[in-house]
Structure formats: structure tokens, C-alpha cells
Image (cartoon, rainbow, N blue to C red; front, side, top):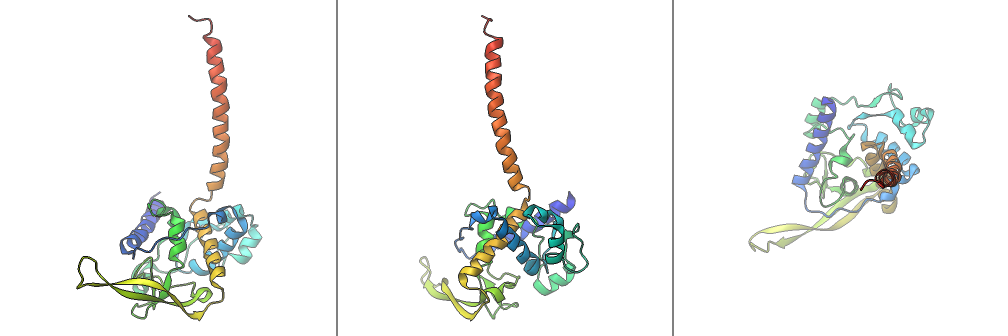
Length: 256
């Protein structure tokens, strides 16, 4: 329980920093249909272990839980488990938190519940935030990593998906402050593609959608089961209510 609370606090802290540092960028809508697409979830799991699991752990998720995504243990072992990890192990990384803090300025948070930790925001779901954030990186030579993010300015995490997306620059224009003409702010105008990526823009957006779908699923693997059981519970209660109502009427019909 203590580890779960710690993980949740880390994730919330990560997101809280993001919220407090946001540049006001509107959130794009995550394609929710991917949550019911097993193929998309499988592709998202592959992206997660290849691009996220190097630094971020998911210490409350076991590899073998991905059997719920119609994967066999043999497929999981051959395609999603690396090094000496076993199928029954949790998704941990060997990155030393102290070294990570020296390199990135902060230890990468556990991603087990990161999609749910942002879900309470009024401007979109956790999936919307992640979907927009992962597609909002641009080159910035003034930053230590060489990268910046429109949704999370001065983010410590570099763009790990840059080979797929390619390298982009961001264009800003100077705008005078409406309340103080002596001050100038920078308004985002658009991106410019500096180098091409392996994927086209549409293919990259689709891949990020797969990854975010997996993060959303990982935050609550029993989500679909819970909804399915909930429907049966409501149907049972509806039928039982009718039966109870008629029994009550039968028992009291002779009582005046």
C-alpha cells in the first residue's frame, strides 16, 4: 500500500509540475476507440517497452497481465520482455534514481497510473493530456536536452520518439501584452519540420494514440471487465426491484 501511494504521489507530482508549467496549449482529443481495439493496445505495449521502459518503470504492472490483450506468455517473453526479466516480474528498470536525477534533474516517475492521475483536470482527460504532450516536442538548443515541449515548457524529459516523428522546430511571434504595451510575450504560431522521421505525421499520431491507449489500459487493466460486470449488476438490480415490488404488493394486499 505504501509503495502504491508513493507511486501515485510521484505521478501526481510529475503531472502537477506539468500543469503549473503549462504554456496554455489546448489539448487534442485522444481517439477513444483505440481503448477497445486489442491490436492498438498490443502495438502500444510494444512502443511502451521499447521507448518508455528504459527510464520509466511500471512497478505495479506485471508482464503476464498482458495476457488480457490476447497475447500468450510465449509472445510476451519473445517480444516484450528484455534482459533477465521473467514473464511474472513487474515492469521495473535498472536506472538508479540518483543518477537519473543528476542527468535529468528529476527521477523519471513511475507510469503505472499516470493516465489516471491527470484525469481529474477539467480541460480534458489524462489520455488527452498524454496524447497532446507526446506530440508537442520541438527542438530548443537553449535546453540541456536540446528539446522543449509546448504543453510542458522546460520539460526534463527529451523527445524519445524523435526518430519516429523526426525533428521539428517551433515558430513563435512577438505579441504586445494587452494590459502592458511595454511587455512582449511570445505566441506559438506553428511547427516546422527540420528533419523527416521514419513515420509520416498521420502514422506518428496513430502510433502515439496506440501508446496512450496502452497507458490508459495499464492504469486500470480491469476497466473493461468492471464495466461488463457493472452492466450485469444493474440488470440484476432492475429485475430484483420488480420482483421485490410485486412481492411487497402481494404480502400487504390483505392488510388495511
